[in-house]
Length: 82
Image (cartoon, rainbow, N blue to C red; front, top):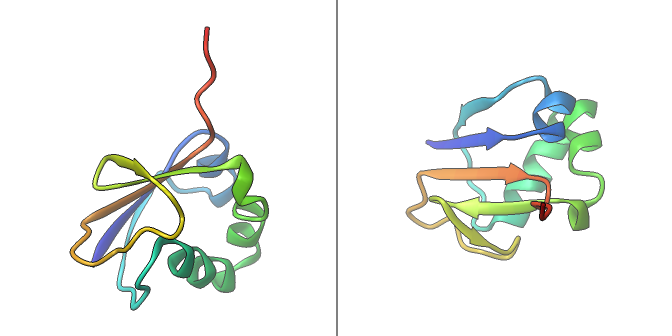
């Protein structure tokens, strides 16, 4: 099981702040493909991966990162300076 967290407009499009999933995905990108195949709201949220950042177990990483042993994946828009 893995916890998947959604922040900002990602959460708004999917309609959930967090969910616990059973996945066979080996990488973040594979997890995204599984999610996109579930429903249109996931397809919309993950339509443009260049507009998203991802963290695995609270460490910023890339979409090709391994999920081996991961407990949490978080998706969020890029942070803006201010």
